[in-house]
Amino acid sequence: MTDEEKAEEYLKKNKICNNENWEVGGTYCYALNKQSYLDGLAEGKPKWHDLRKNPDDLPKERGDYLILHEDNTGFTHYSVRDFRNGYFECTNTIIAWCELPKFKE
Image 1 (cartoon, rainbow, N blue to C red):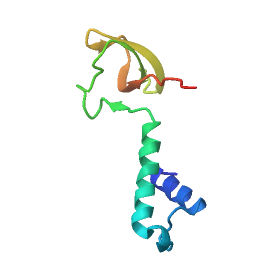
Image 2 (cartoon, helix red, strand yellow):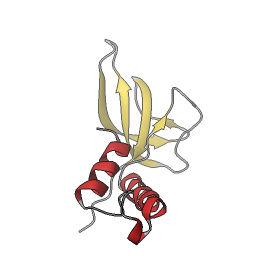
Image 3 (cartoon, one colour):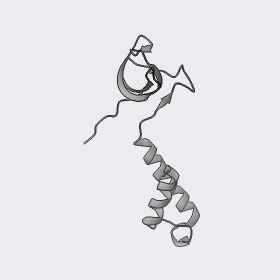
């Protein structure tokens, strides 16, 4: 299910400003709440940097990052790698990276 479909389902399930409900703002209210849902959903997801699209999109700071890489057989998997001196400490082809998620109570 796409994020767009999740937003539609949430709004319909909770009867939030559906298009027929003009008393509470109708289409404008529906679009605003849908965008709010999508923005919140995006905020909670890690931002992946696809190095196939932009090989120069590397981290700005040294540290550990979650990476997606290919091994010599073409199998893709995740691991945590250190980014130092402008490159990742990894012998495999790195496809993408993101910051490590932070646990919040």
